[in-house]
Length: 280
Image 1 (tube, rainbow, N blue to C red):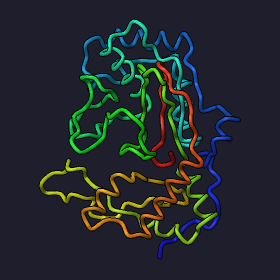
Image 2 (cartoon, rainbow, N blue to C red; image 1 turned 135 degrees about the horizontal axis):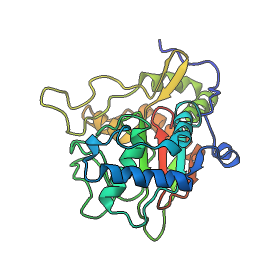
Image 3 (spheres, rainbow, N blue to C red; image 1 turned 30 degrees about the vertical axis):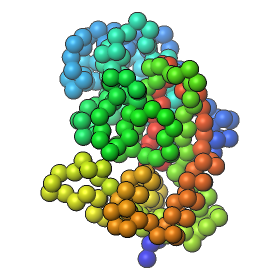
């Protein structure tokens, strides 16, 4: 029997849009000396490939407090952060990549999560758009709320189209609380989870799906985590005849609650958003 928490999740990461509007500690702006740090560090790595850029050769002494704030927000705060003021003006795209990678290297270990094995990929209609086969990585346009594969995902805005579309995030933990409040009998099925599709990127020795159910919600040492990507779940289900009507209604409810509690915010050139994929 699946055991689910018998009380609402009280963590700061279980936020509502109103919470984020009223307390904007998740929003951070780079100071002039921090921008200077980034530019100076970029000059030190010159033509190095991203894989050779480390915290050692990309020092950011004035950014330590900001980096610590972002890390704290991701780990034990709201589970998301928005950084303003990333230097873009006058920078070649290759240097933008180096500065972005160098800054993020102070937050954790960068990983590829696509079959191209690229460490940075673009959301663009241009020639830098990734070729990902069946996956929608890099496709411009509205994307349903989902998680990515790494612990944390970050997104830098270099340029926006004329309509300047906003970004949208929702708290997985708030969705958990809403399901518990309105339909508690459905929580165990979310804890059981669903198979995920491997998007035809698997090795011949692997199965085309995860081969096991990935929990939408799970709990370890009293801490609840969430993992939700309906597209990948649906493709795995289609290989086995599709979702049942009950499963479809459950996931429709999940999506409705995510839309109900999501936070929408402007995302402008020079902004970087960070999101903890276990809570957001």
